[in-house]
Length: 247
Image (cartoon, rainbow, N blue to C red; front, top):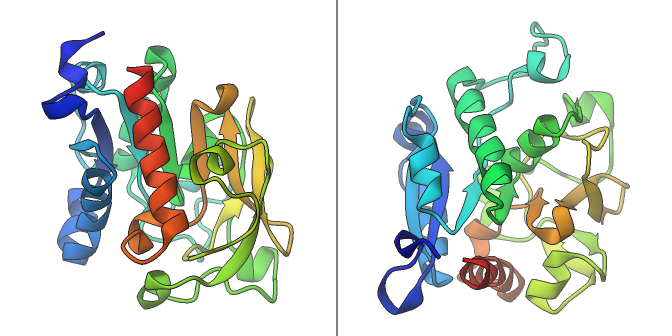
C-alpha cells in the first residue's frame, strides 16, 4: 500500500478534477463536490483541470481513487461531431486533455473511478463512444433532463438502476430511484468495455460501469443533494468506502 493514499484514521485520498475557470464563474457551487467527498469519509485532493499538470501521474499515484466532475461540453472533435454545432458551449479543450489523461492514468493505476455527468460523457468518449450533442434537438423527450441549475437541489425524474450494478451495491437499492438532472448532452453509443447500468424512462443511458465496477459513471449529480437525499449520500459513501478497501 502506498502510505500517501491514506491519512488520519485511514481516510482515503480522493483525487477530484475541477476547473478553476468554472470555479471562478460559479463560486461556491463548485465546492459542493469537495464537501461531499469529505462528508463521505474521504480526503479530497483537488486537481485543477483548467491547467496542464506535468506531475499528474505523481498526483494520481498518491490517490486511492479518482472523481471526474461535471461541467461544460466536451470538444466535438473528440467524438467526431461538428465543431461548429451552435448548441455546443463552454468547451474547455485544456480541461478535456487533462481529464482524458487522468482517466488513462486511473486505468493504468487501477484506481476506482467515479465519473459524474460531463465526467460520464467524457468517460464514454475516452472509451471510444460518442455523444448525443443536443438532447432537445437530437432526441426530444417528455423528460426534462435540463431543468436549470437552480433545480439541482431537488430530484427531477426517475431512473431504473440495474440490480447487478455497483450503484445498487453501494446504495442497497435498485429499480426506480429519483435523481436530479442538468445536462443537454448524453451517451449515444457506448464506449469499449462500458455497460449501461441505469436508464431514464425515455431509454436514455443514465449510468455506466466497466472493469467489474471499478469504473462507474452516473449522469446525475449526487454531490448536489447528498445533505437531503439518502440515495445520493449512500452512493458517494459507498464509492469512498470501496476506494479505501481497494487501497
